[in-house]
Length: 214
Image (tube, rainbow, N blue to C red; front, side, top):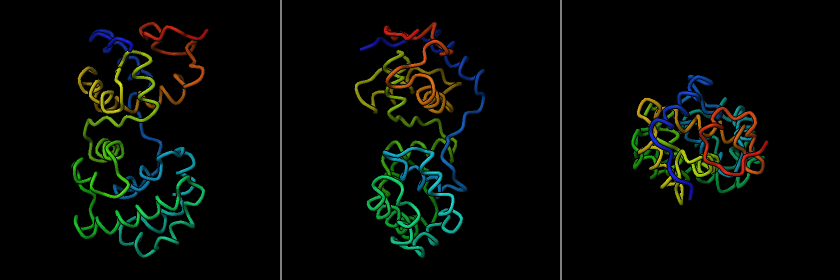
């Protein structure tokens, strides 16, 4: 496994990310904490672009747990049937809407443990919500971050939890809030899976990846 980059190098890398994109944002569209939870849950094994197309009409009429329950599972399916695994996701969204009403007064909780109680909400989804809505420096590790973390030496780890821990332990504190967004964007648009765009990579000089492309 690629070795972990040292602190000065990590500082240089994230300073470069910050200079290029001072305030990186998640690309999933949402209007409140509830719609963010739903959007992230729907995004599993789907693209943000595809989810956004499906949820624009949905969130216009169902932006609270109560409205989502009123819409019902079949009504929800009519909006999200272009998204993979839509039937199972619809069941989870209806269940989590009911749980939010029953257990949390209709409000999205601000703790990881509580969020992970919701059907269809795993650790990654919970971390996205904590970071994007509640302003906590949590690290949501997806396939892009897992690849970038291991390929570059920024956050090596054998699984998503290990990569998450490596980010928390090794990324300088001043960059923790936006770290996962910078890494997602880097993996989505530059450090892509099949043929990374090393020629335009802003952190090429520090990256430990041996098979750099021209």
